[in-house]
Image (cartoon, rainbow, N blue to C red; front, side, top):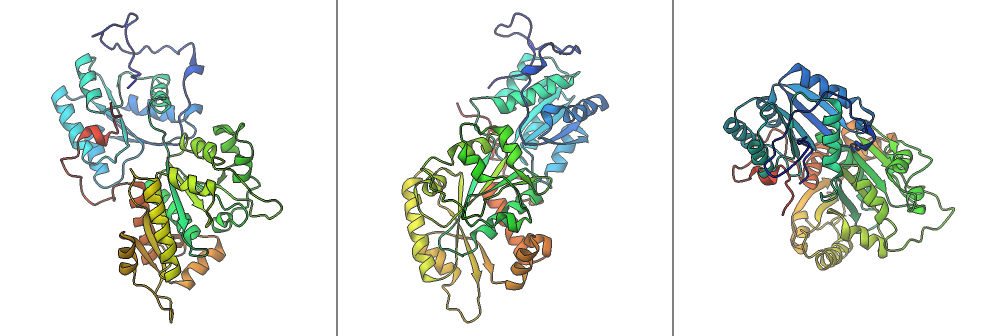
Length: 432
């Protein structure tokens, strides 16, 4: 783990960190840009709060979403006991070493896996620094801070080539054409942004017939086709240009939805696009078309999570069984796909009961969404999500639960985690 803690001019084993100078660095170009992450800071002093707020205005922090609170670690513990943690938490502390470690242990009870923590303190002690690093804290910065030190520390934290990519990919796949997988993917993405205020990119991979543009009421000129057609040119800058902004935290990479050309791609055609999105966005929703070819299989095999959507009939059950068996073989070290059963209780239609459907697959049903033609039809025709049409509807709550599960986040307000979950894993420390 690399530290951005300033060291003496002749660093050596056991050297103590020294306070940062207020001078502007000569080489500010070396400060790395910060990706699309959510940051919450809990400060004790007005000076530190002002530095954090000023850092949020820096051009290298343009993609990040920053919120500043007062109250230090105590306020952070109180806040996250009722809310999910962001990608990065900054906490300022003045407590003694023993008290600080105890406070961090308490904070860890509420942290989601993958959340990183930077501690800001006034104690210039290498033993404290090592203790914090050993417990999974990402960095320790000494006050007084300056903008360049803080932005540089965050940029280096997410630019570490040995760390895992920022983004989590979630592939939604319908086992039969027309089973509603795209609608569920889009509403799930919207629920993630609403629940966790994290940036999400929806990539509509159904190039000839994709509906994401319609569902989000967008008509972008560029999207997935431009990204996969020039993989050698694709980088975060180009990706930013072709993304369509749907809301503060949700962006769309739309499909052309045109039959002017054919879309015959090789197995690895979408790998560069997915890798680029993972490097800059916390959550990527992949709306995968109902097809079976080399690139579709590759997308499903390499995704962090797979959500399988089916309707409760025999053809869907057969297809779902094939998908489950294939993914089990191709992803032996991953869990099974999540099962969403869509359009249950259609009047006069013979159906397989959701529990029986899931049991036949050896799975548990994540959510079983009822047949609500008025609700879904209104949302589709208006280019809205279900929660925008009726936020109190039971289906909207189902999409919220779906978002919680597939992102691996803590349900807000459900109480703290087990004390057996250590700070080491909660703060996302890299394994040796």
